[in-house]
Image 1 (cartoon, rainbow, N blue to C red):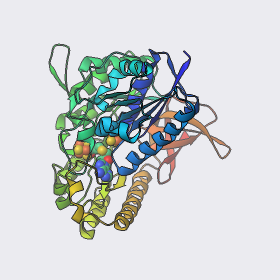
Image 2 (image 1 turned 120 degrees about the horizontal axis):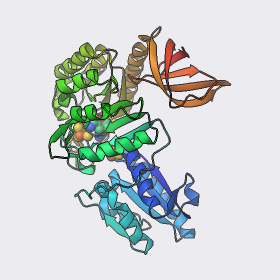
Image 3 (image 1 turned 45 degrees about the vertical axis):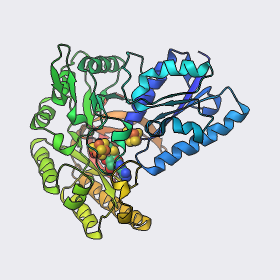
Image 4 (image 1 turned 90 degrees about the vertical axis):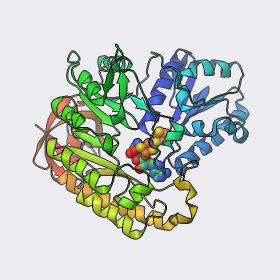
Length: 441
Ligand code: SAH
Ligand code: SF4
Ligand code: F3S
């Protein structure tokens, strides 16, 4: 191998997982991964368009790479991911130095497209028809956790969200393809499998005999893979009303499936939720969480919230803060509303919350989130918990291992040995805002 490829990935875990697949596919064309963009023959920017800021990052990055090309005309530049899916060939006008634009549904076409680019063609492949997946090697990031996409796309069309336009309609992968990928990852030594999807709980795949398999069925099948030793299973992201009784029972019954749900709520106000086109009200969401908490011991529930949605009043925003606390959510991802082209809410310009107000609300949202995390973490002091070690680092002269509990709490533990990849029992002796402190037992 003498050609080098550098991939800059923005956005969510789905994009990171796509990048691992791209690296794998490109090995068949003799490209080797590099972490130094300046040494690369092929540069790929794997973009995200969830908010304007992430989209802007993508454009400024290719601007820089475009300049490099003036002195290195052989350099190839590719633009992939969610912004690519939106702009399609229009990007060539804005950035004529780009060689390849590849949409989210054409991921597995990459090797053929790169061959054409190497022959001097400029190519755009952004059709909204999934290119069939192939059993290529996956060049996974070295970690204890392997990300396994099980479904992609979304049919929900929340009024603020670009994802249905960038990832297309919901598609589930075949059961056997997923199982093969999971077996391979476990054979390679990964200790945790995280099933990925924009709405992971609406997975509906087909088995070898054409039978329907839902997320519970898939979790049970992975849980029964006993020949690979101990490992954990997680799944993200759940749409609140798609969580079934069967799924909750599966989490309880399956020893490898962890007690963790990521269930974005977005707002704690009924009127705003309606305007967001979310299919639940505050009471329904609350009931779902209360039900999960009553059945699943030590469960962690995390969420996502948006501050300053068009038309959101101060009172409605306060309902979000109040709800976050009342529900004792363990942690939430937060963001200020960002208008996205094509989405319904982006047209409500006269209702936009002023920028300074959004920023101020986001700060208050973050403060409430911080308070929730502190309370959530304090509960565990004195408890014994199992940690899967992810890292061995030196913090200010002290050697520390860190990893997560089954319910996804980060724990830092002083330790002289690198125990990465091992399951250790830990006594929780302290708590900080974003992590717990533990001692090895
Ligand atoms: N499918 C998941 C969310 C995927 S997008 C769900 O339905 O909950 C990840 C997060 O980005 C969302 O939960 C939302 O909080 C945030 N987000 C999406 N569009 C946004 C926008 N236009 N402005 C700000 N945040 C946004
Ligand atoms: Fe976006 Fe809503 Fe789909 Fe989540 S459910 S990806 S927020 S449209
Ligand atoms: Fe961004 Fe696309 Fe993920 S818009 S958040 S990279 S699905």
